[in-house]
Structures are given as structure tokens and as C-alpha cells.
Image (cartoon, rainbow, N blue to C red; front, side):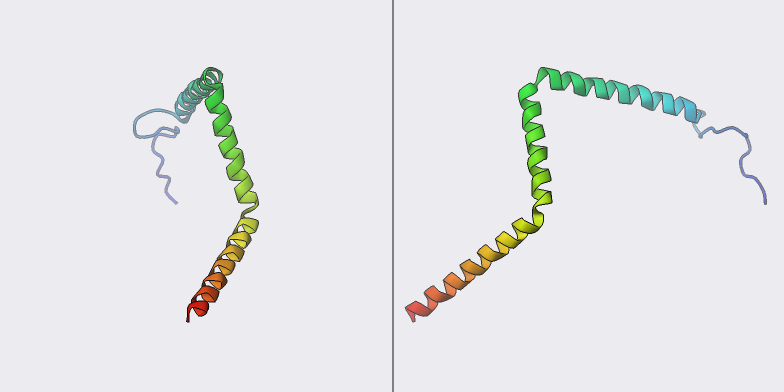
Amino acid sequence: MANNNQSGQDRSESGTTMADRASDLKERAGTLFQGGVDAVKNNPGTTAAVIGGVAAAAAAVMNKDRIVEAAGTMRDKMSSGRSDKTTDKA
């Protein structure tokens, strides 16, 4: 079978190596992480609100079956209540 890799090195079309790209990504990730840390330090109220929202969403996902069951029960009660009211008027 023929080998299509002509250069023998791990280079993309732009000429950068995987190591160069990994280094660039590491720098960008570090910068973004530090920006996030600074944002948390400068805005503790907003951070608490975001964490509370995430916790509420996680609780909703964990209790999704209960919520769906409660909604179904309420729907059944409402629909049975409507049919009773419509039969009373007749």
C-alpha cells in the first residue's frame, strides 16, 4: 500500500505542527480560565445566581419523572373537573 504522507512530519496545510497548535490552545485555555476566575471574583452575586440556576436545573433533571407525573396528575384532575362542570350545565 502506498503512503500518502509525503513530508514524514505531522504538519497541517498551514505549516504548523500539532505541538504548536497544542501550545496555542493551552495558552488560550489558560487565558479564558483566568478571565473566568477574575469574573467570579469581581461579581460574586452574579456567580451565586448562576450557580443557583445550575443547581435548580440539575434538581429539575434529577426529579424530571416526578415533575412529569405531577403534571400528568394535574392535567387529569383539570380535565375531569371540566367534564363535571359541562355535565352540570346540561
